[in-house]
Image (cartoon, rainbow, N blue to C red; front, side, top):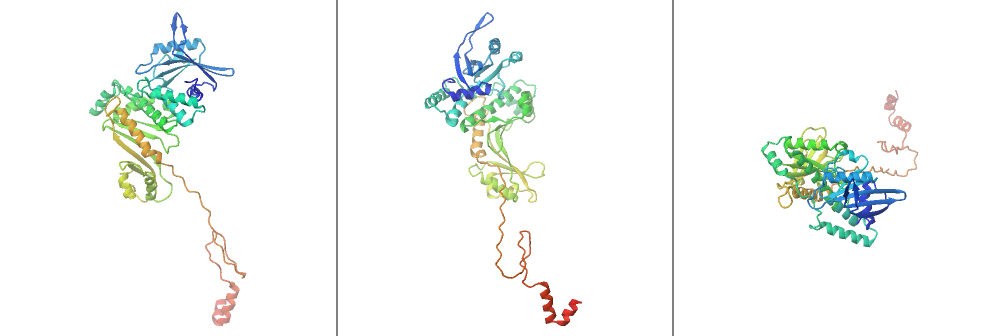
Length: 436
């Protein structure tokens, strides 16, 4: 498929450092490693001019997992032959993009890169390429459509995210009883599975939207994945919660996801900056107008400027009837809003009705479709030019102020000297006194 559909092949190999050139693909190429003959599942070579990029490929389907010994053998073969990378494909989803699900000896990665592609990511790339980016050749587009149809079939072996792991139920029960400790077996595994679920939710939403949706992580978390896992474990032990966020291009803010294992609830929320002008109720109405199709169970919290603690919170149903319920102090400006939607969290570790995975995926898609995609960032209106009133045409020599900053009206036609003369003629006595 990489060789048949040019755009698809380029989309998969370019992130790994391959040039934009001719793609060749081979299956089960034999190599000798010492006295042992090895057969990697595939080999990809991309050539452009004098430059050539080569990668070995190892593939697993269904529930089969990648083996450390096998991958280390292929890394040795790649190093001995001067290849650039080893690419693995399976249904395992790494907690973080760029992180491999199988641990190998890091010394073997000094000269050879190792990348991982979940089947769900390959499917997402195929759908985005065909449905959103487009394929120039109609025949190639049809071939790519056949790949999509094959990968979506349940018997293809290309599974979705199917399991929260064997530790999910014991950890969930320990959270409910308040007996969970950071040293307990399986806590770190549940934290890693949650991050993998976030990444799968990102791939699934991106496949629907036709864009790249990724987990929202800090630079430090990307550089040191152990910090992210430690923070999730601490939150799980102390509060019984797991939280993360995904970033959607051009959305008003990241979509935050929180699992409360004690309460059995999943909450999706987004933080939106309030307008910087207008009365507090005007700012509330600005937000409510954008939530026309949102369910009444959406919760809105308003945060005032320079205020500490929680803000005023109310359901959308009540706010629609009376926007003033979110205004605690009319003298304080509202600086931001939090829009949240809460639903039940499944308890089962697998997929299907009552499963945690499906409840999270449904919550993410519902929140984005009914709330987040309709929200826009506030922008101030452009300043308007002030209109200058036309003065009536007069033949007199009277002076009149026409400056925009003047607050004076049109001066009377007579001058100050003429006024003094008139006062003398009409009332000599008073005029003399005034003159004195």
